[in-house]
Length: 116
Image 1: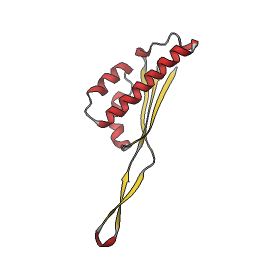
Image 2: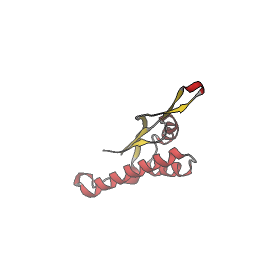
Image 3: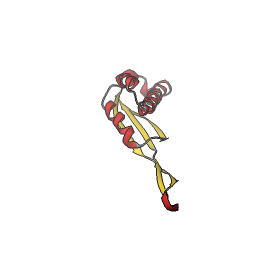
Image 4: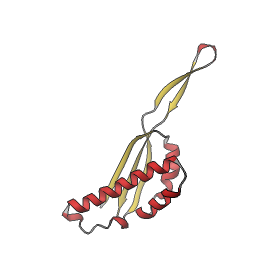
């Protein structure tokens, strides 16, 4: 049984987000929450929010569907945790001699899949 949650268009580069996402891959969901609570990075807050949402999705499945009655949310493992690139905002800044230089404001999508 798999449950997933996706947070889209997070205003942070996927490269920065991947550093945190790699830390929780393969962990127990409750243990991953504890690890993310002590990581002092902005990206850890977004990943923790997505993980919490995935756990809530599992709880909702357990409550609403009869085939998931035996599901133990605390026993779920983080099967997949990925940060993918999203659309990049393009801005320009003035440069010397009347030219313009690009500024790339990168975004990413965070996807977490929990499995038993």
